[in-house]
Length: 391
Image (cartoon, rainbow, N blue to C red):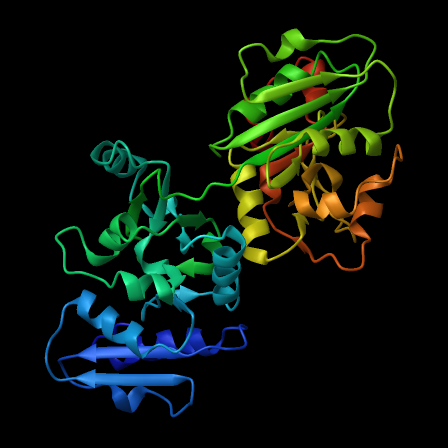
């Protein structure tokens, strides 16, 4: 943590650090110049305050802190920001699960306006695949050892992201951080964006598949495929024309839901699998949030354990009661999990059985506004709102 000479701000940063639930931590605090605030630092073994009389650049201060760090993983800490108590845990999970060299928050909402973000994109036309927030960087110390921070016109963090050679994964745990947001563009060649396979088991759904495809094609996640397994009366391959990342498979004999899920998983190419139901609505950033939840939680399976529905009778949003299970249409999991524990060939109950495996870690995230069940009924009744969650 690079600190100023304001003791009340330093105390805030220390407080957030001491509240973390990660079990093995240290905080390296570097101050160069100004009146020492060492008296404001509690005498705890995990707190290390280093003071230098001579002024130094932020790059030099970061290098001093990294050199003193004993951990394999380094996380930037800002003295006047808020961090949720599971921030470090989520950061470490994202770094390890993504197999990246650098991780951090992609908080595009931190820009003053979308216009300013568009200006950034114009300034970096080849580097708009992803963004990462300077103040939230998390990386392996071994990368810093090879490429320490440098004094540059673009800033030491931007140079580190662009020129260190490290791969970068940007997560979306925005609730965990509140503070200054300086976005750094991630070059396409550096970005870690795992292929996600969405799987959909359907039957005689020609009328609603176009709506489901719309929700899929509008997703903001850039590396994704959709596998459709259809055991209806008639094949309908024409529904996916001009959709290169959608694959349609028709089977002539009826199969159980569990059997169709297994077929779809077997045909998938992604490391991550997401269920894509043919009766539900998904927000444009649903896949992004799902992947981030799986990565940052360190779970094997994630999704929602309570959902919103739009009954045709009163046309009002209703939130279900919290369930002991992840709702099947919102499940996201690692393909490796399925490879070792396939779905039972049941027509109903296959997802609940899948989740009962004793060794699985299951995490229920809170993005309930990103999913709405059975909204296709409105279209069949002639109601076509732009967004079912705003009506």
